[in-house]
Length: 400
Image (cartoon, rainbow, N blue to C red):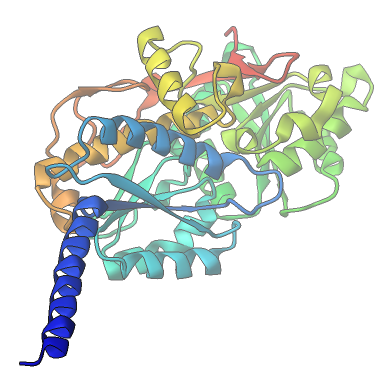
């Protein structure tokens, strides 16, 4: 070999060795492959804060889990976020994309039951594990899947309506007018309301009025129900339409303002801002499954400490959509336990593990256990409460 050839060969050898060392160092620096969790939510919907609340709860739990070593021997959890903007077609496409992702264990849903109802066929065909943390329509879990890949830590309409009716009854408001959104969510509540009234002697539904999404006025339907003898309105609405109704009712003479008992869709957006000062002129209560104000103080402090690491939240008052944040926080911890029990990211194995977890004490409640083969609902009637908005817009437990 010539000296020039040897010199070139030596340089190439040194370069190859350096590249091997560098690539090995990069692989080591990259760390373990993350385990993916998806959010399919209404991030881009005007005035909505619900998907962001779910994200806050998940990120707070993930911060704790990853600080403790992650799952499956050191693999970190990582979020993948997709926006359906409350449009079912977008949600269906999101689920299809999530289903094709390797190492994506489960998808967490957002607030809108009608979107998830439309996604169910794709969830069924792809066997994608779905975690419902806000949506409440009964059919989301009662979906005839065998096996069922949907688990819920959230309110259920067949629990919500009895609670709303009982709250009215305790206040001696027994003649109820239903004001419902003309969607699968509204229809689910209409059926649940009728069952609740049938089970409570002395109560009756004097009328049911339906409105459409983005209706500019609801006062005509409200007045029809009041003229039919309604002593209270049970409202199923999201923040936009509820704010319209509250402003219109507040503008009526005081004698024409009857109490409104609301489902919780109103708490997933800028309802307080949209309703404005009118909210304090109307007797308005809303159902909840959880309140940070009534929770274990030590667990609240832990949540706030974790939330502070991933967001601007420092106090309970900073949390928008508290039920979404709390539900997502607990369900992320529960899912991590199932991943560990399964020893895998395989969705079927994790699904099966969710039904075999031991009791666990979370932020929302003591789960004993969270789920079973016959029960994919983590919450029950004992968690339900009514809440009111304070003058500063903060949602607090109501005196019942």
